[in-house]
Amino acid sequence: MPMRGEPSCPKCGGRVRAPGLFSDYWQCSVHGAVHPLQPVMPPSVEALGVVVNRTHVPVWMPWPLPVGWLFTGVASAGDDRSGGRATAVACSGPAPLGGPGELLLIAEELGVGLGARHAGITGPDPAPYIRVDQPPHAKVLAAGRLTPLWNVSGAPPDRAVFAGEARGLWLWAVVWPEQSGLLMYDELVLTDLREAGAESELIPCGAISPQLLA
Image 1 (cartoon, helix red, strand yellow):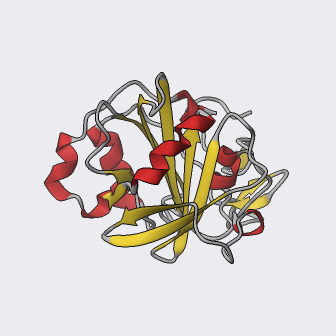
Image 2: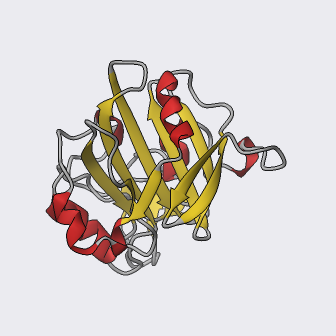
């Protein structure tokens, strides 16, 4: 596994080799060319700003946050040359049925694999695991647009996983514990923090989510 502070593979968390003489891409020994997952930074408005300013994909967050919930970390995949190709925002707070809950919202381009990794399924994309020919299981309001999400089959029983498409990219919602998936039936309002402006300075921060580090 990579040392703390080193980029890693978004699909498996393993070591990656930087571009060099024989390749223009970051390389994982298992998955080949990948967009490297950058080290996770402690939750702060400044950390959010770093990701927001370099990414090419949305940085989704429930806003306003559910009552009692906090921002608990952000991660991104991509390098300085390609920019961010996937983002993951963690939030934590009281679960609908009591106890602590965790929510991870992931936006990514096709094939990056960060969402599948946190969903606990073989990736890289949700398409084989969702039935879009059936009615959606949940809906969120993403940047003002009602966005359907479907349950992702094959995920471990400790979490609820939903996936769909927003702004032409995959949107994953991974919730722990599984019963906290009820949170997704309240039609959460998601904001792309690239468009939040000064409002992002009001985001309350908590301790870093262990799910984001998994």
